[in-house]
Image (cartoon, rainbow, N blue to C red):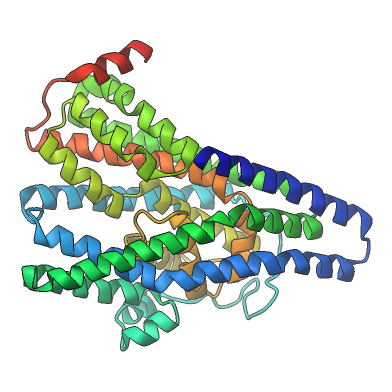
Length: 421
C-alpha cells in the first residue's frame, strides 16, 4: 500500500499542477484567480485543521509512553547516558545544518508572498525571543496548553508525567497501558488523516499554481534541491562520525544499512525499515543488547532528517512571506525544535506536524505557510526518512564501539550486502 500511496501522491501533484495551470491561463482577473484558489484552499484548510486536531493528544500520549518505558527498564545507566548524549549532539548538528543551508541558499526569497490574514508581513514582529521562549516553556494549565496546541508546554508536562510514572513503576502499570492505548488510537487517527493526503496535495498544488503560475515550479525545484543538498551534507557529517568510531569498517556499515535506507526512502516510513535495520546492525557486529536499546530510543529522540527539515521549512516559509528572523529568534527556533521534535516519534509526516505547531510561535502564517510546502512534502519526506534510518544506524554503531560491544561482522546479511555493494 505504501508504494501505491506514493503513486497517488504523484498523481495528485500532477493533477493539481494541471488544474492550477489551466485556471491561471484561463482566468485573467486577479480577484477571480484569488477566488478560484480559495476553493482549492478549502480542501487544504480542512486537512490542516485535521492535523492541528491531533497534535495535543498525539504528543502527550506518545511522549509519556516513551519516557515511562525508558525509565522503567534498564535504560537508565551508562549506555542510556551515552546514547542520549550522542542524540543531543546529533540534534544540534542537524538543526544547525538546516539553518545554515536555508540561510545561505534562500530558496523562498523569490516568492515575495503576502500573508492573507494577520499581522505578519515584511518587517513585522516575529514572535518569541529567547527571553520569551524561556518564560513560555512552562505551562500554567495543561488544559489551556492543549486547547491552544502549545506544544512546548505539552512536552514539558508530558516529560514530568512520564518521569513520575517511571518512578512509580508497577503502581502505574494500568495507567501506562491506558496511555499506550491512547497513543495507538491517535496513531490510527493520524493514519486516517494521512490517507487523504493525495487529495490535499492536489488542492495545495492547484491553489498555489492558480495564483502564482507555473513559475512556482522553479521555486519548488530550488526548495527540494537545496533540501537534498543539506541532507547530503548531514549524511556526510554522520558518516564522518561513524568513521571515527568504526574506522575501516565504514564500508561494511554502509553496505549493511543500504537496504533499510532504501526501504525508508521508497515508503517514507521509518517503521517499515525497522526490522531490516535491526537485522543489519546485528549482522554488522553491533551487540543485540545495544542494537535493541539504541534503535527504538533513536526512533523517539534522533530523527535527524526530520529535525533538519523543520528548521528548513520554517525558515523557507519566513523567506517566502518576507519575514526576517533575527539571530536571537533563530536561536530560539532551534531551541524550540530541539524540544518539540522529541514529542512525535513514529508519527506519519512528523515534520509537518512540528512545523504546524511552530509557525504560530513566530507569528508566521500557519495555513498559508503549510499549504505552500505541503504540495512537495512527500518528496522531502522520502529523503528525511532515509536519513533518519541512517542516523539511528550510525548511533547504534558508535555507541556499540564506545561500549566495547562492536564485534566482527557476522551472518549471511553482511556477505550478501557486500556482494552487491
